[in-house]
Length: 79
Image (cartoon, rainbow, N blue to C red; front, side):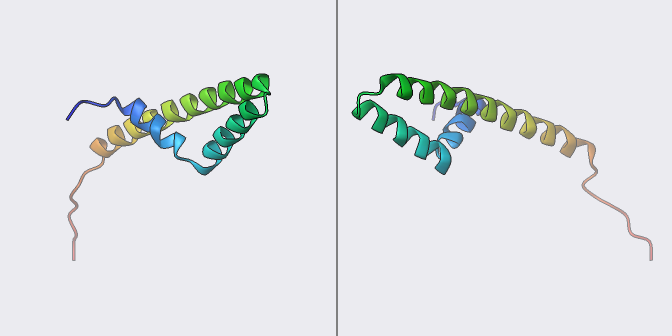
């Protein structure tokens, strides 16, 4: 197994979102109809949105992991 960076796996997860898939499909249709400028605009917007969302997801997972280390995993109950 090769090491996959967490941001890359988050990016792949973003590409699987239904809205992203719909926009990719619309970019493909734009290319098929000869509107390459529209397809490029959609592609650039998708790239920016996906990268920002993937980085935010990665950072939130890291913050949650750090918070998890601060919380004690056991408690004492007095009866």
